[in-house]
Image (cartoon, rainbow, N blue to C red; front, side, top):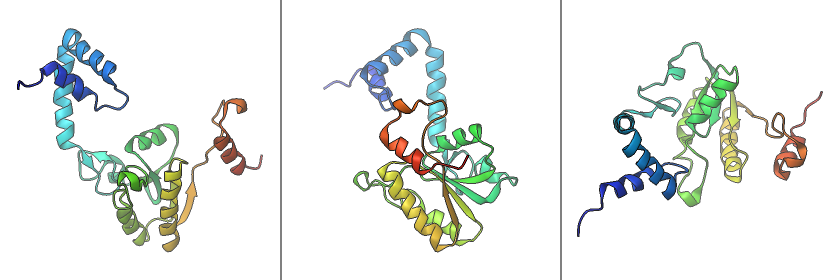
Length: 198
């Protein structure tokens, strides 16, 4: 039996990317081969380099090439305030949109026993060690308000209570510029629960 053609292998490999189905993978493959071979070669080299050199930060679990990421290595960040996020990409979003000057902890997902994601996979033992050191006075939860996110938040809340750490959660509700008639019921309910004095 002969090996599958390289073009088929390339299309199949591209399907590992999120949101890339068979048709998109085919378009990308043909674009690289017909119009941008140099870009494809550069992508392949950078991809191979990234896959071998990028790893998790030893302190916050974000992605970095060093033992400590730039944020953890920055002495001007407030180590007493810890923002817990699900994914490394959320750190970038918070850094770009806010003036948050604390530190981060990246879970790498949410609790999902059916998918084999438990407290250990989320690094909650590592988070516990940080709280046990009594250096953290506040945890800000920036976790999605899903069933899995709520279960994850509950476990973190138990740890925070055990060590006397103040726990807050980012507000959820109506987006800026959003129309009430187009907001789903769950989001509207959260917005009402989290209402503030004007």
